[in-house]
Each structure stands twice: as structure tokens, then as C-alpha cells.
Length: 377
Image (cartoon, rainbow, N blue to C red):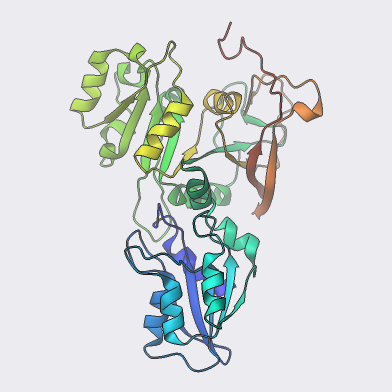
């Protein structure tokens, strides 16, 4: 199953809105065929593994697959049919298909055909492989995640604003791994004006890749600036989407569109974009995941309105100990521990001395905020 996971990962970030899936055919302890679902509309991993075998599997062959075989007749046909037709008599599965329409049905079909089915092997790892797909298929909307890189005391910059680099090079490389996983990246206007990021995935041995690049800019401050940011001028500018409100001005909207930049404008009584409307628009455009990389105000606002689903928190073994250094989060005012925001299904990874903690955001029943921080009074 670990080999199947590695095979599935060969299509890292390329299968949206479908899941990543890896499959192996094993005969007498040897892998004789393997396959990975490579892209939406392409053949599924099980069929590719059978094709790679080149001939009918021997009696006693086992199929290992990271996700429950599909049982519906879509563009590629049901994988359960292909498995039965191939004469496979034993199937070992990692995760159950989270789609409520299919969940467990593939197992029932295989067992009814006399096939031994073993489930839950490395289930946690196989489920984690498709955290974006799992959210998309069960909610109908994108997984909105955020990434922060902080000191041990939760700071993202010194009081002077210096922030490069809090985390080490290996952690920054890991960020690009997750950038390649998500179909879109988002930042606020001040991050664009201060850091001028490219918001692309740059990984050794691979060409630079651009997801959809969202810039949240309710007043279109990034357009007013005399020196256009990289995301408005580089070779990937057609992958940039400015998310704004009517308060930004129609002239600036026309200027962006004339430059080939897409604009999503949402009605709002303030300069603040409705994240619920943004989520709905992403669903309509089949953008299954958004990785928010800053700034602190944007991420804190997402938490305030309970629209942040997942958090990637990189911690460096560094302490500022300065209450005037910039914090990763602000504006929350819990009075008791049970009013704190927490992470669930937490995973940890050591990255050359830095630590990545990531998990699903779990909100308290009552979320207390400082309304002044968010401009609500």
C-alpha cells in the first residue's frame, strides 16, 4: 500500500477535481503492474495497472488500491467491472470513497462477485492524500486552507517588518510542494504591495507552474501602485484573478481586464469581500481548493467568519519575545479555553528542524472577536 501511495503521488496536484489514486497488481509478492490516475477524464488507476500487466493476472493475484474502486459508469467505465472481468480474487483498499453516492458500494459489488475485499490498510494516509477532493466531494465547495510560517511565539515578522526568512530553506521547499497540490493560491493586497510574490510552484527538476492566483483587494490598491506587481505582468498573468468590491472603481476594473487580468467583483457594503460569495463562485468555476498565504488580516478575517477549513502552520525554533512583533493571527478574544479555535485530525512533520503542524480548523460554539480590529464598530 505504501508503494501504491507513492504511485498515486506521481500525479500530485494534477487530477483536480478528481482524487489521486494509485493501484498495484501483486503476484507471489512481486509487483507486475501499476498505475496512477493522471488527470480528470483519464483512465483510472485500476485499469492502468491491469493494462500494465499486459495479460490476465495469475490466479491468486492481489490488487492494492489507495481508494475504493469506482462503481459508477462514467466516462471511463466502472473499475469494479474491470476488476471482476480480470479475474482478480483479492482486493486490498486504503480509503473508502467519501462520495455519499458511492461510499462502500464498490466493496459490496466486489464481494457479491466472490472477491475477497480487505479495507482500511493505511487508511489515514490514503485519506490524507486526497484532503482537497474529500472536502469537495462531501461539501460541494472548495477547501479553503491557510499557510503561516511563525516563530515559536507565533510571530511572522519583527517589529521592523523583517520576515525573510523565519523558517528554513527545507520548509520553504515544502511550501512549494503544497502550492503544487492546490489549484489556487490567494493573498491580500498588502502582501502583494509589500512582497510582490510570484505565487507559483517552483520545484527542483520541474518547470515553474502557476495555479490560479487570487488577489483580495477590495479597494484595488494594487492597481493604483505605479509599479505593477509581478502577478499582473508575468507570463502567467492570465492565471491571476483580482477579487474586489464595487468600492474599487470601474476604471481600475477596466484597466485590469484590458491587461488580461480576470476580475471577480462581489457586492458588499464595505471594502471587505464576502468569503461565502467567494466560496460559491469557486464552486461554480470548479476550483476545488484555495491556499491562502497571507496576510495576517486576511487569514484572521477568514477565521472570524468561520470560512477557513484547514491550516498549515510552519514553526521555526526561533523566539522574538516582543509583543510589538507582528502576530500571525489577531482580533480573537476568547475568555475561556473552550472558546479557542483548534485543529482537528492533526498531523506533524519535522522538516530539518522546523515543524509543520496541519489540520482541520475546528470552531467553538461561541467565537468572541474584537470588533474594532475588524472595523465592525
